[in-house]
Length: 452
Image (tube, rainbow, N blue to C red; front, side, top):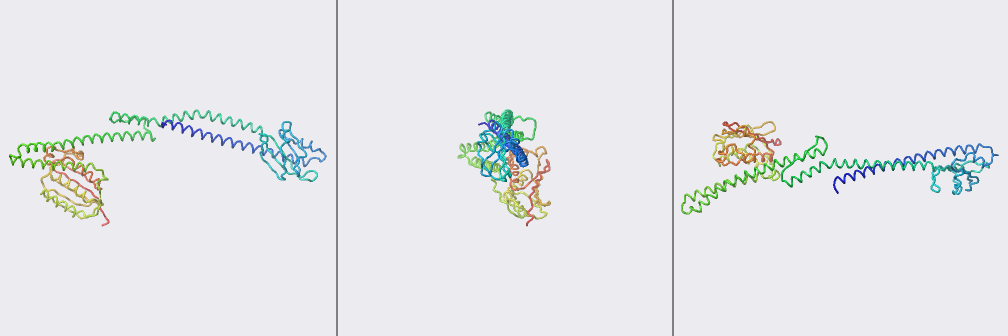
């Protein structure tokens, strides 16, 4: 069953049931009020009858006395203590009431009874009869008129419910169309995207604050993100393929030369082996960086630990100096304890130190400082710098400011994107300030651990 049909059916049934419950409540409430009113009225008539009978002249025959108070559409009778009715008078239409069983209860009663399918108001009041006997004056009056009025009310309420069902059905259909129209449009758009393979957005009506508009707006936003990510993915794959193609071509060329001339010429053999090894290392480094960039944050296996910042940075610099034979000066204003992942933080420092090494020849300066609740590590070089127009793009994968310098230095344009992911994973933050021809400063900020 389609959603539109479900909404139409469930809404119509709910409204009809609600309308039926209201009509039933109206009918039973009104019927109870009418019967109670009639019973009260007949009770008052019975009280007046008893008062008139007890005050009447004893010489007046009982039949004549009762006929003076006989109801227009009922029966009036005297019931003695032995359960017999000595005198009973009825209207011409209610003579069959004489066949109704008689009982003596010796207490006042007011109730609705039914006799031969017709409702009656029955009132019984004890009295002291003329000979001193305790008897009951029982008044029975037909409520057929009230029942006819209630039947008319029942018919009117039924007709109203049937007539009200028509606009209910129409309105439920309009409501189902209103609700499912954006969903149908969304489904059609997704089917079209699936069939064509091209991203497409749905057309939104005038802006509103309802959930349907928000659903459409969210879908369009999601499609925009998917389209953007797909384009980035295509560009990433294209760039990665291009970067891998070069070392593979070099390896293939030297392998072919090694196969043809390697046995006869030791120089060719050594040159080929060194070139193949160099390009293999280059390709291995590229693949490792690509794999790191492909990881999600939850796959980084972050292990937060507390450690003093100054000795850790000094040890990292010492290791880097030993590997690349570069002059690095470390300036520490004060020591501070931080809490982060040591290995990932070391990898972050290596990326920035390596960039400073590649694009500068002068001494590299590392400064450790504190600003309020933050620990700050600055890495400064006096190299070629980054043009202002290129600065926002350096976090794009495979982006390189100068292709010739990057190729010569062995860079892939993956270091800063990887640094960005690492910083986010360990809870650090960094900013790059650079001026072309003067140098670059990277400022890494970490939260202090004041518990130590």
